[in-house]
Amino acid sequence: MTNFEVITLFPEFFTPYEKEGILKSACSKNIIGINVYNLRNFATDKRKTVDDKPFGGGVGMVMMIEPIFKAVEAIKKNGKSRVILFSPRGKKYNQRIANRLSKMDQIIMICGRYEGVDERVAKHIADEEISIGDYVLMGGEIPAMIVIESVARLIPGVVGTDKFLKNRTKNVNAIEYPQFTRPSVYNNWSVPKVLLSGNHKKIEEWRDKNKKIF
Ligand code: SAH
Image: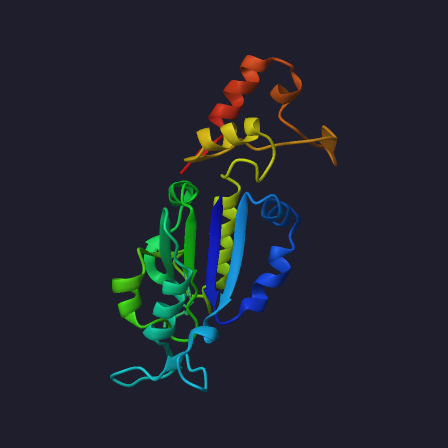
C-alpha cells in the first residue's frame, strides 16, 4: 500500500479531490491512502505561527522550518519513504519520477506557500525537491495532486485491470498512441483508416509510430 501524506496550510483544497471516484475507491480498498495534515497543527507557539519574515529583508513571508520538521517527524514511518518538497527550483517532474515513486510505501509531500520555505527544509528534511514545470504557482497543493494522480495510476489495482497496467508500465517513458472512438466520421473529420482495417499488424505499427517518447 502506498500512502500519500500531504503537509499543507490549506487542507480543504484536497476535500473534493479525495472524493474523486477512482481515488476514493482505491482508498477504500486500502490500495492507497491519502492523508492530509494541516501544518498549523504542528506549530509550536500558542498563535500557531508557521511563517516569518525573511532574513536579510524583502517582501513576503517564509515558511518556518520547525513546524515542517515536527510534521515530517510525526508522519514518517518505517519502510520505503520519500520526503518531497515542492519548489520551482526543484528537479523537473516527469513520468520516470512517477514510476520510481510508485514503488514507495510512503510519499510525504510538503506544500509551500507565500514566498516559499526556509531553504534548510530542502537541505536537511526533504529527500528531493520537485518542480512540476518552469512557472511559479502560489502553492504546492496542485503539484501534490499532480504527483498523486500520476503515481496512483501506476499502482496495481487503482485503475483498470492488470492488463491495462502492463501496457502503462511498459509505456512508462512514452505516451500511448492517440485514441479514437465512434463515430468514424464526424463533420467530415474521419479517423485514420488503418484503425478500421482490422489488420492488427498494421494497427500495431501505426500505434508504435504514433506514440510519444518522453
Ligand atoms: N518565492 C518564490 C516562489 C514561491 S511559490 C519565487 O518567487 O521564486 C510558493 C510555493 O509554491 C513554493 O514554495 C512551492 O511549494 C510551490 N510552487 C510554486 N511553483 C511551483 C512549481 N513550478 N513546482 C512545484 N511547486 C511550486
